[in-house]
Image (cartoon, rainbow, N blue to C red; front, side, top):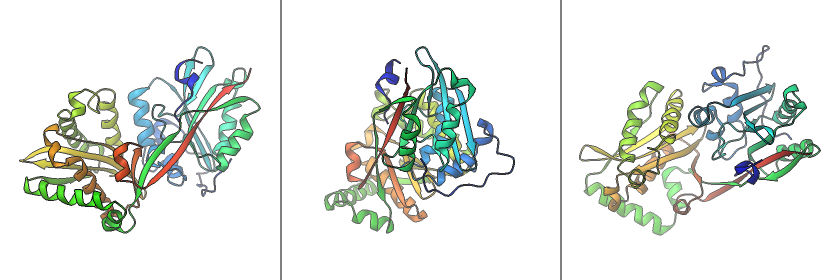
Length: 350
């Protein structure tokens, strides 16, 4: 194995309720699973995972389509578990199985209390008997029942390594906006109040946008791209306006809009968009995706005010948690919780 497979990736049974499948098992195809109420997403909603949105099809399928669409997909499931992996031919190991979203590795490809047994059965299929695949399994919590079940089941046939962990930061929205702000530092609250007054005096306003179907998502997304291209990320060609990220986030917002799960707020001044914050809601959790602002607006703390307005909106909706994604220095001020997941890299013995 070479490259990231050699180095490892970043990153039995839980007590989640099982889902009753129909007598005739739901088709486990891309098209059948590509909807907000699919069995995949029903299982993801019950998974004890710190990043539930990235366990869902909206995130996983959007990545597969835009980053690595030629891989073979393996969907397997029984009454209380589902496994979703993508296979890539590999010169040294035959097949490399990895999560559909195989870059950031935010989600988990094993869903439901029976997923470990389903995964074991997949490895016993005829295609893998002569030459077991190498596997990367992301989004696993050490010391969980699934973690121990996997190690016990696979160590006789596999060498097990740890990939790079994924550490995410989040904040509770208990008590609404006031409760959230009470858990921020006095200095941070003071700076937000000052920034809000300055921005209001300078004519900044904020517009909420919640596309309710995929066709309605393109307009807001084009507005986001226009802002991104005037941001420091756009100037340096390192943001979401660059392919394949440009296509990925468009497809993601479209899928989120099928269930009105996308949340976008635009900052506006003098009739123009000058900033945005974008994310999606999964159950009681919001997962931030991107935010950006016109570089000319840096003196007005537009990024901080967009975050504040998003918290305000989510608190009004009764969302319970604000997930900011991977740890970065600025997020320390916005989030008090930190959670860690691991990726297991499984290399066949012999």
